[in-house]
Amino acid sequence: MSTSTLLSRPVAPATAQEQAAVTALISAPEAAVSGAPVYAPEAAGLLLSLVLLSPKEPKEPGER
View 1 (tube, rainbow, N blue to C red):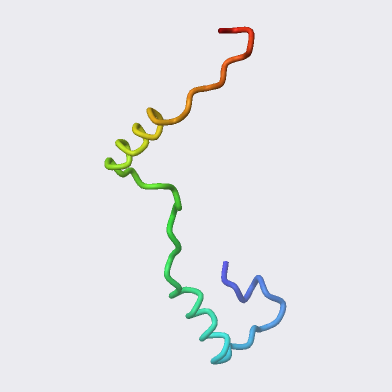
View 2: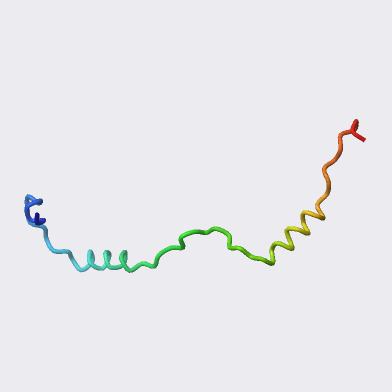
């Protein structure tokens, strides 16, 4: 089935501005798929030291 049978009247050709707009949309660079953090092995040591140096939870007054 051709497009001429789907349309009740003929369509005018695209203008130069319309062609430029479509070309700009098609040729736009793609965005990053994900902004998720990337694995960094050197961060494991920093996280471990922060956990070990973090203050302990305060005890309730009656639990000594």
